[in-house]
Structures are given as structure tokens and as C-alpha cells.
Image 1 (cartoon, rainbow, N blue to C red):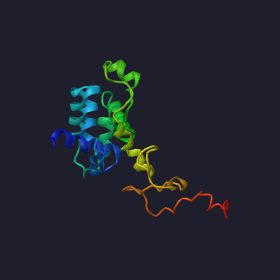
Image 2 (cartoon, one colour):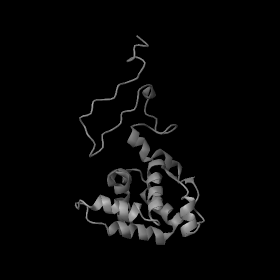
Image 3 (tube, rainbow, N blue to C red):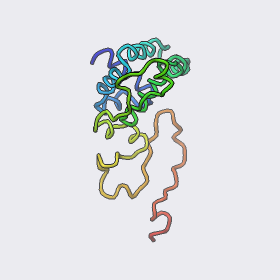
Image 4 (tube, rainbow, N blue to C red):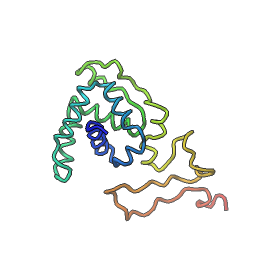
Amino acid sequence: MSNRIEIFLALSAELTAFSRFDLLGTGLAEAYLGTLDRVVGDDITDTLLAAFVALPPPEDPTRAQALRATILGSELLGDVARALIKLWYSGTWFELPYAWTQRFGPKPADATFVVSPDAYMEGLLWKAIGAHPAGAKAPGYGSWAYPPKIPTFPGSPTSKPDAVSVHPQNAGIMS
């Protein structure tokens, strides 16, 4: 893998809170980097990657604030980074806001579109909510009869009591 894709993966991991392993597992890293290049242009993509590389090291306690200020708080990069987050989660590139387009100029490929059928199926939102994409990746017979099990993510409290199940059998409806 090129250094550029490695930087893109590291940036994406930090923006999405999913590991590099999870992102690679989607099989879409190169497609998403290509989408970013095609929609906003190589120059803005390279500016985004350079801003990420210039952040304090991961162990520095000021890194999260620097990411918010330098990338998410940037007029040029903020909306692009948020569109990238939505791309990873949904598989859809959402058109950049009108204010961004007015300030930095329209981009011919900037329209809302699904990158590929695989992008829908591999969207991180399914993993985040503990569900499966409707119409794809069947979870097994009868599995939709039960509420999804939301996985615990690093840094989240693990001692919370489990949510109350609302399955009809548990509610006494089908006794």
C-alpha cells in the first residue's frame, strides 16, 4: 500500500472511531480515497492528509483538540472531513454544503451518490448499531425478531446494565 492510502486510513480511523483493521475489512479504502480525489480534487485531499500528518502524535493529549481545530474546524477541510465520515458510515457521498461550494467553488462530481453496491453493504453504521443491511448479508432465519445487540466500543463504559428487551415473549404478550 502506498503511503497516501496509509495516511488516509489513519485519518479515517480517527474520524470514524473504527480501527484500521475494520476499515480495511470493508474493502473500500481505495474506492473512498478515489472518491475523495474525484469529488474535491487531489489538491484538497492532499491538504487534508497533510493537515492530519501535521497533528501532534497520537499519545499527545492535545491531539483530539488539534484534530477538531485544524481539520473539523477548518472552513476548507471541515465539511470535506464530515462528508468522509458519512461516506464511511453510509457508503454514500453527500453533496457538500452550499456555503462550502460558494466559498471554494463548485466541483463537477460533487453530488449525492452511493459509491457502489458494496459500499451500502459495508457501511460502518451496520456494525455500529449491531445490525445487518436490509436486503443484504442476511443475518439468519428469524434474527430480525430480536433487537440488535450493540457492541461495546473502546473507551465506552462496559459496566452499564443491559437494555431492557422489548421482544413480545419477554413482555408477556405471547405466553
